[in-house]
Image (cartoon, rainbow, N blue to C red; front, side):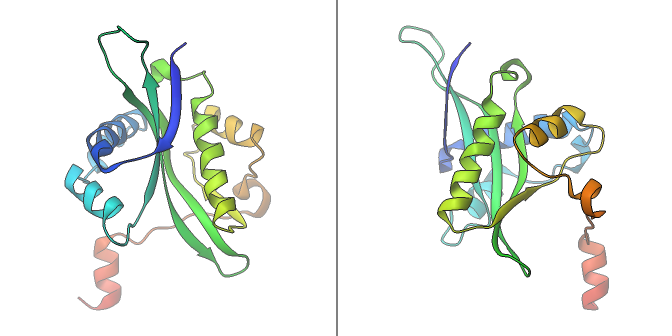
Length: 170
């Protein structure tokens, strides 16, 4: 088992974050939807007013091993606001490379995001998962998350660019 530390992402991690985003998209059979670039990640996450924040899981190697530290997972999140409860965090994506799964890395990323949420005075943090990903759902429930689809019947919707242009009359 590799020694892994969870830390805040740095600007120099954007290439690794993009690599992991592509791996996640492939895992979810959605590779054709990845349009983000390393430059956009850099600009949007590390500018004056970042649109997102990110935790990375970094595998540490023992002294004398040829490979240095390697980013093997990530959790990308941002601040949102609940009109009913106030400050919140949304965990957009969490991913751990297959060969590093089963070591508690995903749980540690989620715990770090929970710490951030509490430190920022948030009442909760949310995330979504594809309906076929039972392993992830079981993990989230084991960690104490509530399935809002089961409990309250919430469904997520998204307005893509064309729909936004149509709505805005552009």
